[in-house]
Image (tube, rainbow, N blue to C red; front, side, top):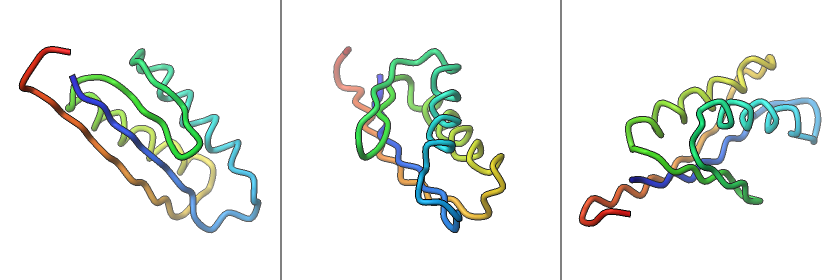
Amino acid sequence: MALMEISIVPLGTTKTSLSLYVAGVIKVVQESGLDFELSDMGTIVQGEADELLKLAARMHDSVFQHDVKRVYTVIKLDDRRDKET
């Protein structure tokens, strides 16, 4: 089992509020059915590494649906395989 922490930042928006983008990204995470936790600096999701990376791509792409031209995404992945979780 792996943990992913992801932060997604739309660049070049005309408003200071990011709630529209955050809501869209969270919807993608909820639809995945994976366990997740929101924090002030990002979202932590638990799952298999391959499914987490696919989810990260969907989360990243979801921001472009709001006429954003550039998105900055930071992903941290902790994939421990030496013991069962």
